[in-house]
Amino acid sequence: MAGFPNIGPAELVLILAIALIVLGPGKLSELGGSLGRALREFRNASQGLQEEDPSSSSHVSPQGKE
Image 1 (cartoon, rainbow, N blue to C red):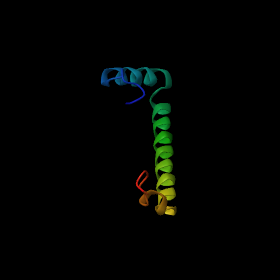
Image 2 (image 1 turned 180 degrees about the vertical axis):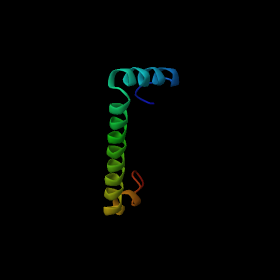
Image 3 (image 1 turned 90 degrees about the horizontal axis):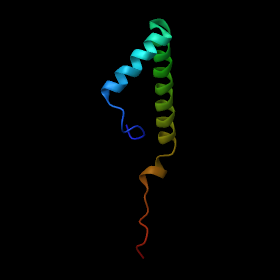
């Protein structure tokens, strides 16, 4: 993870264990499902934007060459 360079697998397991204790298994699974749906919608929206305007990403003009 670029923003959190000091978080490894052991720390992630600890965070998930604390979340499980605080939220409980039912709420944690609900939260995971909501997060998954949000990520899927974000990916679909970003793909839709790329498909709408393919010319902006495929056309790169060389700079500095005259």
